[in-house]
Amino acid sequence: QVQLVESGGGSVQAGGSLRLSCAASGYTYSSYCMGWFRQAPGKERTGVAAIDSDGRTNYADSVKGRFTITKDNAKNTLYLQMNSLKPEDTAMYYCAADPTYGGNWYGCAALLPEYNVWGQGTQVTVSS
Image (cartoon, rainbow, N blue to C red; front, top):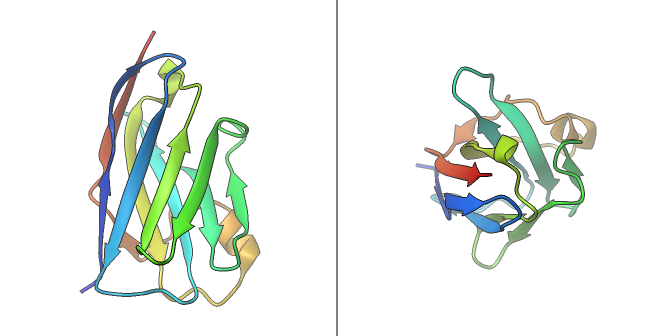
């Protein structure tokens, strides 16, 4: 059974940094699209960043230049480095994976919440 477990969330002041981790178990993806999403109370879940097995990445405009998505294939772990955090970054953050990814980068880069596998989420709170 494929599982994704996020960690690394917490409370920080504006301008601070956090690194989220997403450990995958039950499956090693040789070809993958993986992403980070976030959802604030009362709002829709939106895409933050995506990465595929070729190392291509894409980011939401709101986080470009501040967030970095990476994947450690040896550890089967996805990361999201978040710098220069703002109060509007406050949300529950989820990682997601598409084990059926066939290399359609445009689909992966679209940052749509159409993934097969999701983690349980980790809370990020940024205070002003």
